Image 1 (cartoon, rainbow, N blue to C red):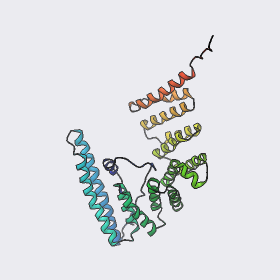
Image 2: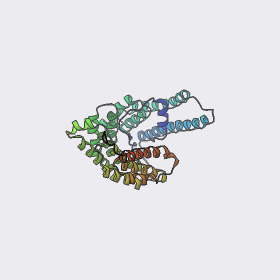
Image 3: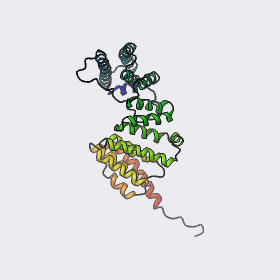
Image 4: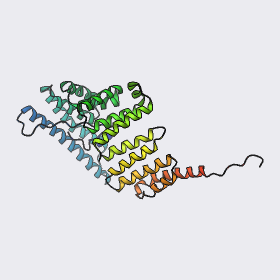
Length: 319
């Protein structure tokens, strides 16, 4: 199952999004071996094609409507949502029919759970994830996806256990370490209690998980920036480690826009560390208009710091 623009559809439906794991990734369902003659497997692959087709239809409708709206002729969101929900209803029925006839098909349960989560029916997705895990307990994707769910909606401590199990089953999947690190970082109180460690040790644990994710995906710019941004929440500031992390992100940047975004973070970290000259030097490397507001914000912070540092001393009373 592919996940393309369905997120845009979700934005039409949702009024708010849950706060938890920033990188909710549903591991793709394993495809059937090439040339398989198993009729059930062939039927399952057709079901996956139906899922992809439904998503492709929704993606096209959303893109087309955005173009029409730009010309003043777009379809109202309510009508577009209704049309998309009807299309996804066909896919949902196809999953239900397949699982009625093949209730022990672990990958179908996992795929259906992913589909249901995509359309924000998380409560309906959980039983299918649990069923998939029970039927195939050696599939790390089921453990990861359940961990994602519990990190968002349920027992966070259970998500720690489930991420660890996913990693035990497949220690070469970067996203499992990334998700695990993010959950530990965000839910520090739970992590402190679960692992019986202090807050600085929680940060260390999250950063260690991030480091393992980076080792497996060293060219992943979004991952590298997620890791680097985590330093903003660590008190006291680990300035040298933060700058090193942003240096790693810079090395993975694909173009000048991404590089200039990193320069802004260099400037901000240096400002936070009291290194105004270094901060200004990095700001001078930012020229793209899209960063103008952020650049001005950092410049104002630098100016305020300069004024506070160089303010004339107040003479004692009576002199």
